[in-house]
Length: 212
Image 1 (tube, rainbow, N blue to C red):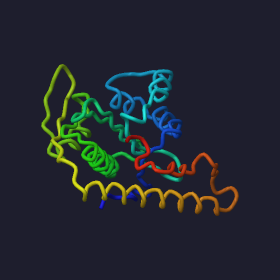
Image 2: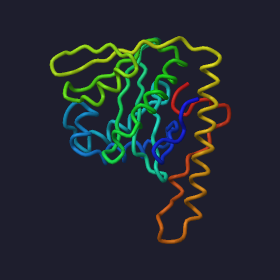
Image 3: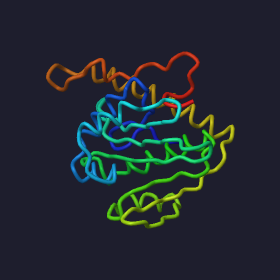
Image 4: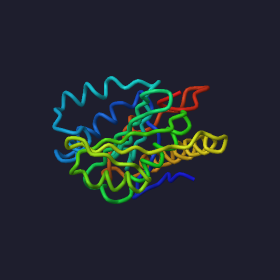
């Protein structure tokens, strides 16, 4: 079973209407983390434009949430029927605590169930943390002009893997609702909770929040 709770937070899929949570997370990244995520320096405006163009049909995003705030993300982009690329970002305070591994596991499962047999992970040559993570999942790494490209071979989907994703999504959504309710019950002054932190319920007949 995929992990739901990691380092005091929970991992779940991001719904299309929650693009603002992804945008705010990327804007909070420190300069080094932002450079590692995008392969170079990017402005706040570029991040706003990037997150405004998310397409539900070819993008699956998993978020790591702590107290309703997105602190990490796995961004899976489908390139072709059997290939995809993934990018990861974790805010500095939550780095090196297993969040990246948990996000990559979710990403691989989502890719597998969409027929993706080859996942590409690109990072800068000095991004040793990402390279170590890719090697953990048996990625084949190649170096090209300061960029490292990792290729992870993925298995074909099975009824079991499809059920695993459905069950994990259900557990994650239930955990998010419980987390929201517990924050509502906190005494005044212990923290601010807004309705925007409550994950929206999945539309009727929709099996996946950010991809078909």
